[in-house]
Image (cartoon, rainbow over the protein chains, first blue to last red):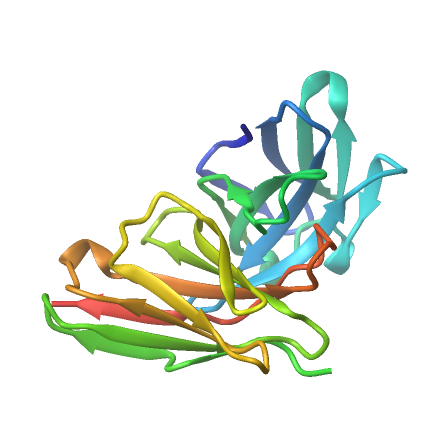
Length: 116
Length: 113
């Protein structure tokens, strides 16, 4: 079974500061890992995903995440926050080679606030 | 390439009523999954449809049902609405066998009063 824990339901940073959103997962098989962003009253937009290969994954809008198997983590970072980054961020996991049920397991989400 | 479109965008229903939500999948995708996102929560998997059949289901009661059509579009039906069914319902399309290529729609906001 898979699960996701996002540490910190709210994160506040100043514009230009480093963004770090934490995600730890549990999976008995190699996982696929995802970060999605959700703006108010909108659906989910994929920021980046890890499937196989390189453990440092670069996504859109300057975000990146590193898959650390030993720590079961997939933290999301961005060197310099922009006001437009303020949104809800979700980490999600899916198992490799499962029955193709399309089931993504999401964390509870982290609200990112960016202060001017 | 068209994305995933959902309709309607907002809906208000009375407790006990039935509702149908619609989803058109992204071009080239043949699988549709539905998720329920309660306020302040992460999305929860309801079920997936492939080849017009349900082939995976989350922890939702039978009053949540669905359909998939030959053009891969899908409907989510909820009977006997309860107040706790108030949520954002998200549809995601993908290509069967590709475990990481999900595209989400903007969702339908359902309010049950």
